[in-house]
Length: 488
Image (cartoon, rainbow, N blue to C red; front, side, top):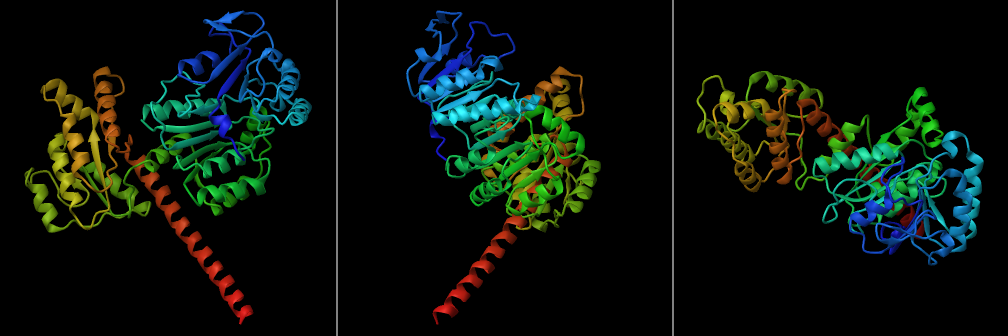
């Protein structure tokens, strides 16, 4: 399905646009114009002759024909009249932010809405959702700063709240977005329609999804397979339990099925399933690395033996490897530290030397040159970095991290741990260090378990993808042999 004009509209109308920013509505007119949208934008509200210097229209019939995207933020009782007018005017896409449809039991209204839309060839987004975000066209429904250039991540969210949370965390973690669709009750355009469009979009390298229900399992699985054959698809499923079923039904009118069957089918068609929102964000951050891990052999380094022990336990349980370092690697590490309360085994314990970023960088460089290591995981302590800055007046140079990123060729996945929860100076150091690490392209995690869990899911997906490829190869080979024997 061609959704190009939905994400790249030349014209946008906002039904129910308001001069104020309150009233329980997203101020779409203000956010789209404020994001720098270059197309025509038409506010519609009979109460105003103009809104912020832009002419306001009294009704849809006063608008030009064939507007690409119409956003409806008007009361639900006006929905049928609005869609009839949109059909008369040959509008292409209508997004209903408005709620009060199937999620409240008003299923008949949804059916009537769809019937009227079909008469004019109008496609509906929603209802009951926040709509569309596209960095390239500067289409924006949020309050966050717009990225200057498109990233490589797309997101599909059945919940407007989860979608907003995804945008907020993505912006914080410098995960640059390409396209986002919040699709709500999906009475017309469904998750599979967006998946198919994203599958063919070469500017999108990874898709993340929050899904509560699927209307057509066959079409969904077909679209999922098409997409996962080309790029990773990470799915967080809502409504997995009986309580979750009820919550999903009252939220988006979702009819949830058996999660055991659903999850098995989704995995078989290439999806990466996660259990919670944080896990989804952690995998997305790993997925946009410039250099992804090519193997499970981990080199861990940090200050303190206890955390090394905990990491080793979790890593082994997750199927990661901590191989013995080469002797030359150990000698290189000892060039910057003394053999006192330290260990050059893997995991590497730098003791108090590990609070010095230059020593950390030197050790990482040594691990980078070790043939036994695939990925480097340095453990940084915000508490100690902050203490050194505050009490010893020694500031760890950000340039050290920049140089580190430039000089090291293997994937680096830092842990930036902070245990002080009530100190603004420590938080300032955490934000600053996190920002620098992300700026140079490293995924950054707050604790050992998040790194291990994320890598485990990543390698499980790699293995499952390998097995699917082998299975397809065997299947295709058998078909080829069968055809060959028939020809002979």
